[in-house]
Length: 174
Image (cartoon, rainbow, N blue to C red; front, side, top):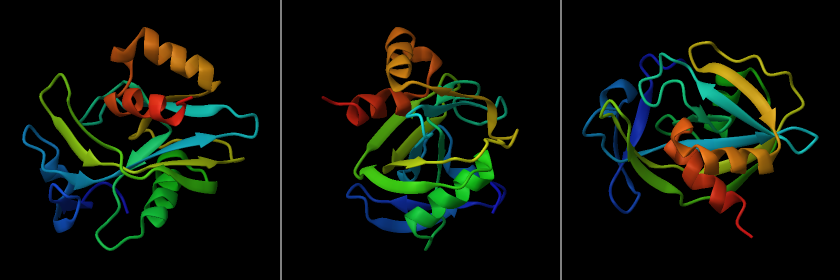
């Protein structure tokens, strides 16, 4: 499935599914609450994959973020959606897929006024594959040590997506 015609699951304030809508129609200045996910991918050396969002992305173009994000299709299992998007965005297969922040939720407004408003469970996974990103999704990518990523986000949070700045402290809480 490509982004064109992609459907997202709409949610009520309690997180219950209440319908679906075209992805392109829900990301605007009045974005309804909907279901998404984030995934942080590690390699065999314990490094985390960070990506810089493609310049053509509707929200937060050109900022650094977690490995990849996406939306499960209506009726699609969340783990299937994560696996699908890993292949689509980065050309990788995942192992050790784990749900680590099941109730993560955020709302953020980018500089253009577009709102993200998501219940966004957070996963971690590993891969041994070479990263071959889709140009429409990823402008750049890099494997980094988690401590270096935490320091970079702390020093320049404006260079990163709001969801990674909120997720990292929860992932690496003492």
